[in-house]
Image 1 (cartoon, rainbow, N blue to C red):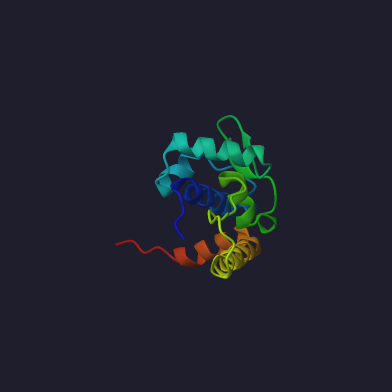
Image 2 (tube, rainbow, N blue to C red):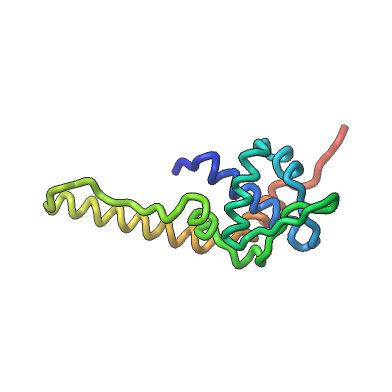
Length: 141
């Protein structure tokens, strides 16, 4: 599965916000962008979409930034994907209804259903927890 940069950046920003959720302090756009190599102009547009969807809120001022409005355990990958990429969905371009075409379409639909179930089963909190495990302790020389 190939993800667009837009979707990847949206998930990265949501994971960063989930990791900061417990502190209650907003994260600055610059912090998210610089830590993950996301251009600021692009990140702003993503965060506006996530804000309009009710996942993120922003605070102005020196102590401002972005933070999750909802518990990250309540936001799934499917939720974020739907906001950033729209409904999606697949359709067949086949014009003939033969048993061969039907078998292929049924298989694609089964794969799409399983894919959706997987996205709905993984929360942003799950991703943040995995990122925390992968970061581990830092050693400096």
